[in-house]
Image 1 (tube, rainbow, N blue to C red):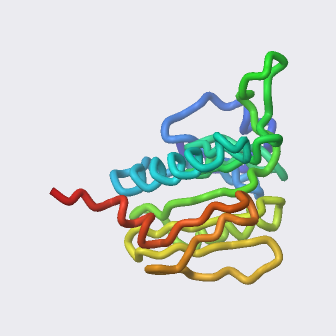
Image 2: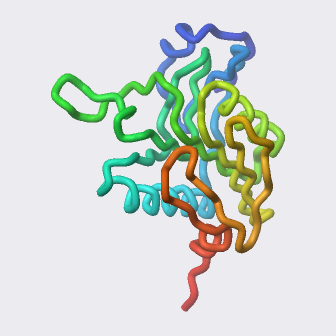
Length: 187
């Protein structure tokens, strides 16, 4: 769906759901997410699995794939959102709520071949400026990760560099090689 006029948040939220998901930029521009391909999907799965295997038993956090988050006048669907355990919205009977209206503790975006790297970087800068503690840009083509932490300069990570989730998830880290190594299917 292509929308040429700018929408308010209320107008955007009234639109019917689409696949791939629509997102509302802070300036009212509506964009459609790029449909994930194989490497993108695999990296998203690995990040969610590893984070949840570490965090859920400790009741520290939970990672969600493709979860719509609405905050600071925008509606985004990060590839992976991580919410601290106590910050996960719940229904009256204690189940996970459908609507998340607070910034995640961490937001992870994968660069797809059809995407502008600058658009993804700009989004991650916006995330940390609006309450997200950690934002990551994962670029499969470049085998790199750019990490944005609130109050610090962004830094590029490659190879054996550690992705430190500390601002969002105490005690969890992994190397860039570990992350991208999950793409290999050795016979």
